[in-house]
Length: 88
Image (cartoon, rainbow, N blue to C red; front, side, top):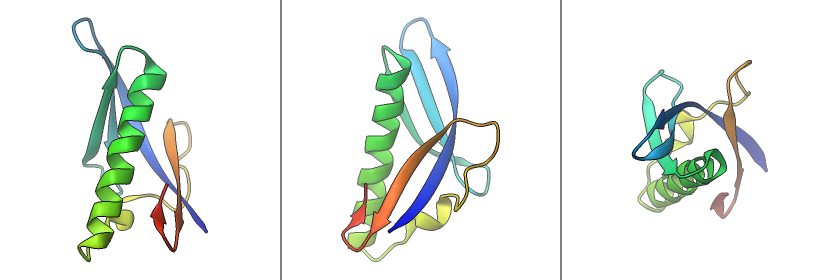
């Protein structure tokens, strides 16, 4: 099993609540999660990333290259585990 990381930035909007925007290894946006609370937004981002990566793997694309092998310092990250069945 391999552990991968996706750093994200947190935004807050009075209408939408919290928003977590994932940042890939090129510094570009990679998924967005939103929720009334920060944990809800983090979970939404995690669900999006897991779904996207697993769908990509089924179609022959490897989006895991967009994730970090080590957690960047001083930045919040979601943590993902890659195994033979996909990512979780």
